Image 1 (tube, one colour):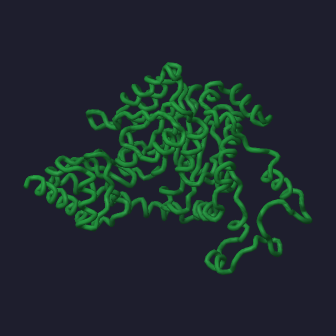
Image 2: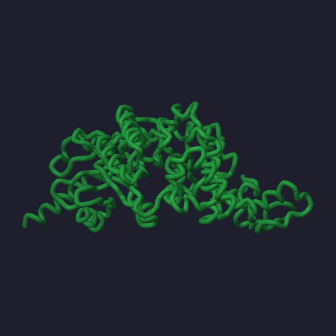
Length: 435
């Protein structure tokens, strides 16, 4: 075994043996090499003042070589902030800016100890890192029955983990904390669980209330007190898009330092929060009272990045950093937030009007990009195809009854036409079935 791996594993096991037990086989084996090309290049960058012939980039007159056809579209940026490789862990200034932003937006993180955010190639990459580090074949990965289907690929297909679902809502249309607790406690024999908390939820657009948030935290604490090691992952893809009276913080802050058997992991990013979907800039952050444990996890995470994508794209990291540093950033983001909130409110107004009650109910929503209809009389996939073929309207069918509608991409003035047409599509199918 590589000596660095031994050191990292010894540090984690000494600081928190429960966290060491959470690591997958790959998680225990991975490391970031200190004597490889990147580390030697970093040393040369600091000391090679005459000639630096270490890394595979090309220079002209001391600056990165570039094509004018590309640079003409980026002439506001220094070539040094665009063309060289970004560090595997991400651009240092961006990591600091995102950390500062998290502290402002999540007051519950104040006074807690957590790692510097590590840049990922957006959130799917962050989740796949979690899967690689912590999920082995047969490990339980717990998340609600209303979920983003990529969890199955990341944890189930890629890592062979066992997917454990529980109903998202209880009988009172609240977050089903009792179901979460039951699913966690059911893993006592395994002694380990990975729990994914995705709020605002995709596909329903639901974020728990403050009371429900405390119940969620209590459910995980109960699992830890029962002897279960829990990797608690907050998938905060749609963070900050909270339109009503719900949690307005990530549960990451409440979970930090909660129990030695709970390792909080925050996966978030600029993708949805800052409306830069194609930039592919995300972050992964760990919480622990031990700085040395956090450093070891950071090195293992960087090792995964080095072994898969090597490093994330430098230009998009620079673009996001400049946005975060802009004095107009918050004003501009609030403007877009208000547009999204108006669309969500208009959607709820239409659904509460009573005109569609014969065709569907809807799952509670208060945040994010989406909401879900629960169809009463027709199959969701049949309706989806019919709406697409006859009316040119795209929706997402989930199971036999649920139809996801993204109000995020529909102008507020067009939402009534959208739902009227979906209702018409339901009527079409009901007529066919009655013949």
